Length: 477
Image 1 (cartoon, one colour):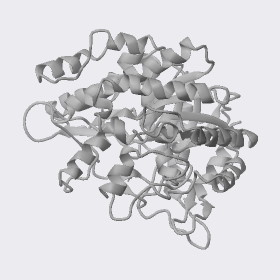
Image 2 (cartoon, rainbow, N blue to C red; image 1 turned 60 degrees about the vertical axis):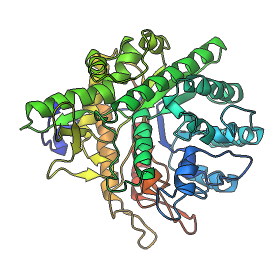
Image 3 (cartoon, rainbow, N blue to C red; image 1 turned 120 degrees about the horizontal axis):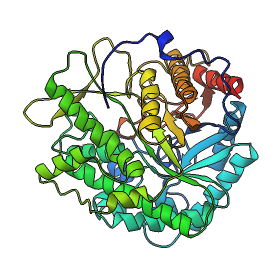
């Protein structure tokens, strides 16, 4: 979807929804990922993941930046305290991921029952506090042995993931009803592409290549197809075994925008970028076909993307029960140097921006409205939404006044409610993230949490944004 960039005052972003009440059972939560929070990387028989290789072995996040401690969330004494903080905030759902290399240390071998019991206990502890679990099976921590065998570029990854998913279903389907199968394919693939650049000694360009260019499109589309097929196969296994629950993927969907003075080349690149970032996934899941313009371009470029004739139909036939949406910002695109498809991302001059891009809550409404009108109004859970701003998270006299994050959260919840009033079927909203944590290659420099973590002492402090979120939850019940 391409839209011309236009400024919109906050007052015009949202309808008056002060009296709007959210439906009963709505999931108000926060989110996290295993590698970013757990620490304890050598505890209970955990195997290595690709991120241990990136950060520990190759130090791609900088000297000393690892997930060895993170926020120590694997430790039960620590996470019980954190659960009480979530309970205090009136949160009723916690989205977390299970670590594949904890459950199956080498990716395909025997099950590590110590890890199984750990996560079962975590779910029970959450439940005791009145908090349901939204379980993510896979949040980028590919077992190192499988990553070394090609990872998602290898079509065998479809079966690797299915094996792992079935282990999860066997051991956790009695405790949880909602499962995110795979998180953010486009961002994970971009992280791996960036890692390859770093490993080759290129540290000049640190931007995350989320928008696939002609240089990265082959590996991107190949991996996306395998990931979607892996999720579809796991869904079929879940259904065949007779388990009860809802399954979906968490996709980082994002409107693609151009400026008001966009050239024809800018607009052409934006259409293709939208096809790769958004339509590639949505068309397969809800229409049973990949976008014709993207498939045609890949063929014209002689890209080996490993899409078989029935792949998109297989994905469609999975009939996922919900669509997880991770929304942070729109992508502004313009044509880069050279001819042909060659987009580059940018932030327009004067546009307020967070770490993850432009602050545009109106584009969340636009995205949700688009999915309702073009893709059959599926059940949606906002599986991630949040922001971090340079220099904002300062602990002063025991308090963190993160006003920009607070405004971001309030504006985006209002934008979601506008779309609900328009008829969108939205079942939950998860803030990214519950705590400050390890932000992958960015290390511990950028904070996204509504709970402040002192990296030296592990002490937690509720931020202004946490109290605001709690107030919104109570008002909207």
